[in-house]
Picture 1: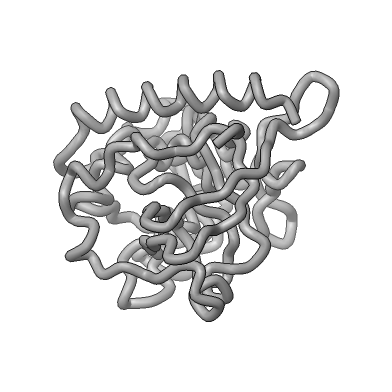
Picture 2: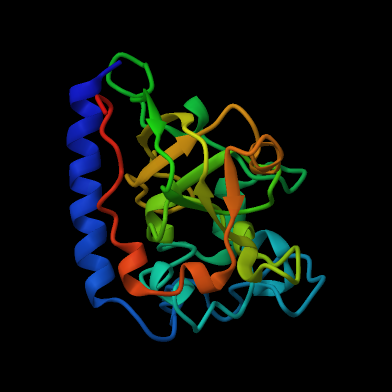
Length: 235
């Protein structure tokens, strides 16, 4: 199961995240596009809605969050890396416009071709989060930087007015078995954070009373976001 590799990767990711979280905050300001992208960084992109970058929902929202905790989680975000918007679409989407997702369900793949992962149990009281609909089954430690999750820009779109930037926070209320491992770099993001994969979707886990969704009042303090509880593979 490559437990030693998982442990080393998680220790590095947690240390980096804690140092980053201590210094990050305030409004999110993304870097500009490379010079080669001009005069038209949106060339060839179909425009549908001005709330999205280049008018295309695949590229995510123009306005990123200004308030804690999302401003902190996105403080280091550069959604296209060193690519122009049209280059990003060419690299990371299929001709039908859907994203090209990684193999091995987004886990880092070891030299022998196997994913670096392990089965662990999250205890009652652990807080986890996700960017995306309740129909998904991948989660992160509460407050993990967005760049460590290696998610596409569309996951920041607001599909439900009750949840800005499709952000959901949950608390484990019954011991929860998950597959844990480091996130593979993808979508021009470095990844290498921790992801938890569950057998059921967030909505199903709520229905089965494994987790409950938390209102913002229960995760609005900075100390709630110190990642000092991510279990190792031998926990």
